[in-house]
Image 1 (cartoon, each protein chain N blue to C red):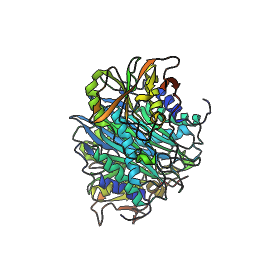
Image 2 (image 1 turned 180 degrees about the vertical axis):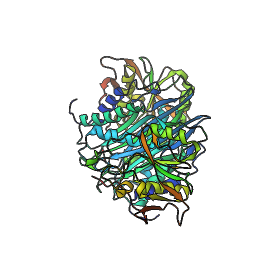
Image 3 (image 1 turned 45 degrees about the horizontal axis):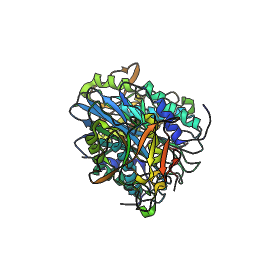
Image 4 (image 1 turned 90 degrees about the vertical axis):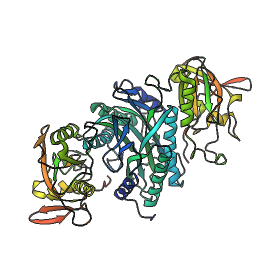
Length: 311
Length: 311
């Protein structure tokens, strides 16, 4: 065991490897947007956890209700990536002792009310306080969901082949930009759109995730999981106002659906545009490379992307 | 909304109130050891979350594998309190950037190996890093379990009546004492004992929880939930070596089963002693008072107990 510095992405890959072959009950193991557990013959439950670290994922002075809402929305976006339906959530928060009772109540309100709005009630949790006043608040939400698809179908990250199309919902880029309206704090998880997409494409929808770290990184994850590379056409990228291809592939926290499919997807889902932005190709070397066709040349953008930077 | 300082226990009570009547799907709402969700006609899943804050619940220099193990064991103790069986868990960790890759791998090993040992594999999670080096690591574990009891039976905290016995498994006190062998870091969750107890007492087992904040506080919780008071006989308390009644009722992190029952419980469970230590009585004023009979006098010990103090 080498003593390297912490890297979130390296550790995620490592822990996913260690989580394979755990038990017959584990129908989908670590490394996807959610894990899935079998409960007897016909019942399955999906589960995922995501955190908001104050000062890292939101500003230190952000309103507690907004922090709570974001913590839930991030998890709902993971549920959308599986075309599943949320059923409940549980939260664990460790707060700085400088926070007041009212601050904690408002955080709870953000969690509770967002949960109710999406039929995923907050059913429990744990609250702790840090020892030091200046310690960052951490809010971890675990969400439970049920599949909407038949028993033999799961939309994992792991199904793209050479020739498949890469497509995305909505528009990309600028979520952290103040002029972009702070979309990273309040975005619509694509729950209904994902279920409609899965119904519309059937088994031709082969892999999906939600865009949290930017299209370059997240498309690379779909490619790596499928053992292929992917090529994106810059001219096709649906950019938010004020954004070019760099922001569209490099900015994080878009929370749109990014998916691989075997045929043309619907042009819209519940009124939301759907755009084909690229195609999976045979891997040139180690799978997972992401190339961008821009202004007549090809650029490798595998490493272009977003690490949650801190505020 | 008043702007008082943070109190974990006050907020837990407040959030439990807000969590009532959420949805028909929520079969057991916040405020118990676990929440329960219905999944269609015959399938139910229990869920709970608990955290370990480094520097608060374990020493800053504690071995990461030990920290991971404790985070899992605390959750397994909640599963025992419901006489349920664990099926899987998910973890969210926010680590200081001063931690190394090896430290994080050892933390993961503590979670992963303890999960496998108790048939609750770690099926997913999230890893984040703090912005500041001196920020405390937070490890939140969410555990899933399935009931072992018929559909119409749940052993909640909420069933004690006047006349019921108060009983406890094992021995009490001194879990944080270094001479006590650091039991708060490595203790056997009473899973099999709880299932045997529920089978043996049937519907005469009316309420149960695991002792995390000391018998005084936790017996008070059973009493308050049942709308009664409770009287404990100091001479009957099963104390660990070196402990008297003060440690037995006031120390935290015993992780034994504390329960209310309508008839004498078995003397042992899988070889573990079971001791009747008191009896529930009509509430004198607001329910939840805890009295101790010691040396011929009665003392109110409702407020005696343990707040996780920090290391």
